[in-house]
Image 1 (cartoon, helix red, strand yellow):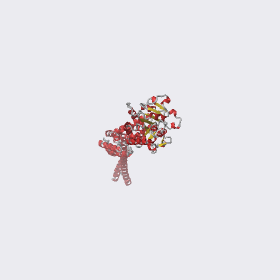
Image 2: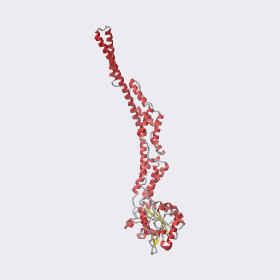
Image 3: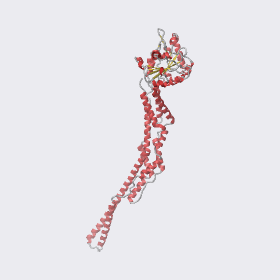
Image 4: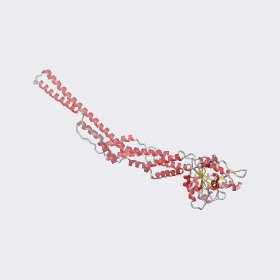
Amino acid sequence: MTSHDATLGARTEDLGRALQIAGSRLDDTVFGKVASSVAGVRERLALGVDHTVVALAGGTGSGKSSTFNKISRLTFADVGVKRPTTAKVTACSWSDDAATLLDWLGVERERRITRAGELDSADEAALSGLVLLDLPDHDSVAPGHREVVDKVLPLVDLLVWVVDPQKYADDALHTGYLRDSSGMRASTVVVLNQIDTVPVGQRDNLVNDVKRLLRDDGLDDVPVIAASSKTDIGIEDLRGLLEQTVARRSVSAGRAAGELDAAATLLLSQTPSEVPWHIDTVLEREVDALARAAGLESVAAQVGAAVRNGYGSPEFRNPDPDSIALSRSRWLTGSGESLKPGWQRSLAESVASARDVAGAVSAALQSITLDTRGPTTQPLTRRLALGAVLLAVLLGIATVLASMGILPVGDTWTTVLGVLAVVAAVAALVVFLVAMQMRRALAARRAQGVIASGRAALERVLQQTLGVPTQKLLDEHRAVRELAQSARDDGPSVPLRVEENTTTGSQIRVSSTGGARLPDLRSVRA
């Protein structure tokens, strides 16, 4: 049998890790079901899921023990152990590592046979991993027998009911067990034992009557094998059926895989496949909102005015708390829109509160330098402008005096003085205009710098208070989904089914010696 322990173990741990990450974000019912599945599968794995468990069940005198010995080709007497009785479970295992499973089933040490050392033929090798159980008689009055059977049934890959021609219609068998096992009809076989005691001409009728009763029990597709542990009729065919069962994935592995698949599907229902949220787009929108709430552009304009005018003390005011709360609410709505309620609650708890965001915004903006100083060349340009003005005034006065004859310099110098006065005045005007333009350009740069620094600070605040925790939660959401997907079954095994041409009562052929010949059961579909 192909080993499933490692695969199932990895899937179980993936599901356990997903459950650990998701935690309280899951609905309580979902968490409980998934946790129960993980714990249950871990328990199954501890017992080993690569064993094929076949249980022989039946009433007193049906021949279970003799059938058990015929299948195992050993008897307890052969190995010096007390012959098994039907009061307690007896086991024959074709595996060296079935001890944990047998301990859990409560099989006493002295009631175990191990065939692992007897695999000296291809027939025995084909049964490697098989654990064959001889269950207590179902019609025994001893207390606890039903509990033993109920404990075994969930692990059974094939349940073989051994009945005899005298008590196959026993009401205790049908009402107490068979009707309750209709859900296991795909892994149930009925062996009509002691067929050698039935006249050849009545065997078909007898098997057909057994089939009729099974149909009444809801077990329409259950095959009926006519056998005799005394004459070995049907024993090899039953062994062939066991070989086919061993070649399949065990019921325990299949049930564990199915349970993991169901739990993973349930977990996936709590983690939608796509959360359409992109932080860059959200950041740009909410930075704009926070900038308005903090009056960033107004402060930047005040800085520009202070630089131009040479006076003023702009400062940031506390951001509008309602605007901050609205921005946070939009963030949560956008990033958590596709999340389930539990994840949305966790998101709201993981990001900073509106008050904390407002505090962080205030602290970040207060750290921005609001430089209202003028250009570094301002003293020089001022001196140049004043000097040019003074020179223009002096030259103008001289020109006036010269033109009035008070300053005897002649007409030529009077003209020169007038021209120089005009040039000095123009120079003063040019220096003044250049200085004013420099101040305006500096004011614009300072205002833009305040806006850029403020927006960068606000973006950092959003990243730290809202973005980082949001991204962490969405990453965990994605991790839970990926782990749950990896825990899904890669293909459930086909339920144990027997081809329609498997032996039934109407297909028993009488040989020339009077024995029943059964079709080869090695054609059973895996």
